[in-house]
Image (cartoon, rainbow, N blue to C red; front, top):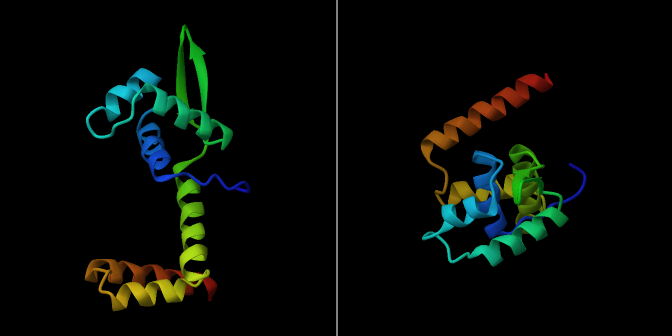
Length: 127
């Protein structure tokens, strides 16, 4: 993915919903987020317009309703967000991030074992 999308936290929440099941209408989204957010119809429309401009979502008009769907894959967005976070917070150093997490005991023994497995697979692929 060449263009950075740069989703806000609220936009991630909306994208997660659309990645789960789409297309969705604005009415679907309002109903889904009612009670868990204070988003009304106007807030969702504003977010969707921003997300359209970022080329994260698109829609098809069916009758009088717009049916929204994601046009960026979840995996692509996650990779980009991870790279942006790593660069912004740890100046691109994966080692510094992992050291910080291990020292702060933010990594469970299960996660640490999975990380070892992933690193070993990476080493094996480069041999």
